[in-house]
Length: 321
Image (cartoon, rainbow, N blue to C red; front, side, top):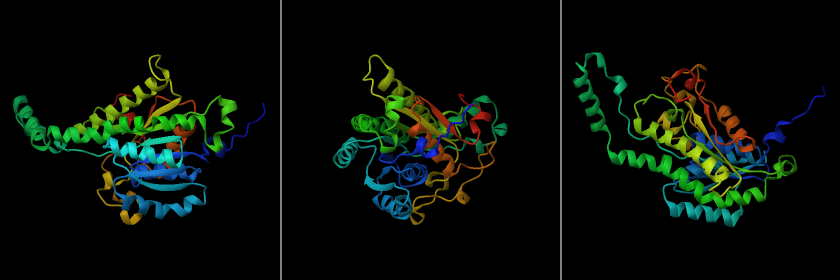
């Protein structure tokens, strides 16, 4: 049997690709942006804080340009449809197409620490139920839940809709590195990658019911979009792949509670609370996220999937898997 050489560059190269990453100035969003740019993509990193975006581009831009890619700051509020329209118009004017959309922006929401209560000392079931109710009623409001679902779920949907025509145009003008794939694979198809969370897969509240529910909704939306956009007989049948990455614990401003402005957007693993254990015995690294991002950006045979990148956490925790 003859061996076949498959250079990594031919599999994951993204020269000529145009990508956009929401929440791309820090944390997992910046990890995704750096991964794409390292393979030659021009990556628009978006967010509300222009100083954060500019710091990220300045810190990482030179090294990425040597690899053929770039980071371009673009202010965007994913919770505002007019802001999304303006961003899409900007990409239309500058590029005329989009190949990869990473919906990463999101927030944590209300936390109610019921796991810190010694429930064995709370009396009978009625007393426990009353205490459990009171804790959540005191710490959470309907507005808290609504304000969480807006960036974590609603924005994911409206961002995908805003950039949908540009992604369709990207199919007609594939990245330079993927031009040869048209004959072999018939067609390049653009990629939408939703960054959700293992919190949307596990059956644990992890002290934040609202966050976990929002991430479960984001996973469900991923499945629906992948089907409705391409496979539904009643849908537009646009050749796009829609997948999600459900990360475990990674270093970010959300998990460290520290600003990354001075470090150019990347958090230190030393600042992460190591309380959440997993079989891998460590938190996720930038390399782990980069591998998942590049796989879903390039693999034409993967769609409608939610991939947990979590060190095996969902393999041992009660989950929907």
